[in-house]
Image (cartoon, rainbow, N blue to C red; front, side):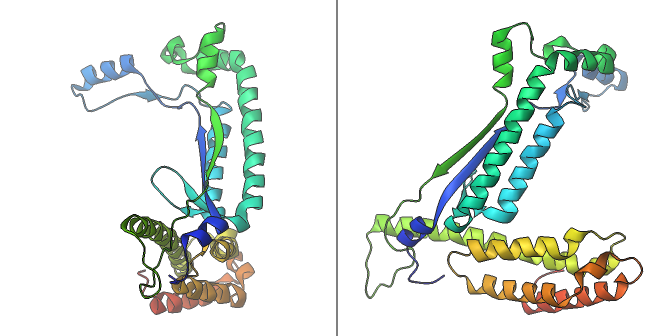
Length: 294
């Protein structure tokens, strides 16, 4: 990491973001059936679960949440702490916030539609589940309090936090001496920045591994070739805030493979074999260069 990189530079070039998304669980233990099966099988090591909201809009809401988490992870941010916060570079701020605002709107629309359709949903679930239907698994649609309590289980909130400023991350002891508090603070930020760098390196390694395995794949997808790599390259361009040379070097090699290998031919069952072997060979050379395990 560059020794002149300091926390003030970091605080002006990135901030922390956490998106909290929640929805009711679609898995519910059926105690009555569980006890029945346990008696029949003479064992306590079994439980019966049911999906009370199967086939409803809840599936779309949960799917949206997964898509948002994946987009944040692969495109806009790097890991920061164990509380769910991630580091968002200022260069990604506009695109990221526009995306999140759009997804929050979709989330709210789906939740409102789900609420309006609840009476019909409950009738359908009653028919689908038959004897397994338990009204206690669902909110009382005739109770405002019960409905409010249930709808509180849905959520889409965006939290941001500025990074504090306190001295240099890497200290040149000949010109700058920090007190013990600042030193601890600097080490913490350095460690978290390195965590983000290591995460991006591992993502790049996995792209190369997938490329190396291409000849053995029975079916090819567009994302196997260009899309995942280009997304990763853009992420490195914006998120390598410490200008890590390992990451820059790996990005350069991945970018060269994307530019030299005919990615379109990979998905062609008739003429794709040659392109797949070429991609695999190129990936293996880079993996050997960086000592990446297969």
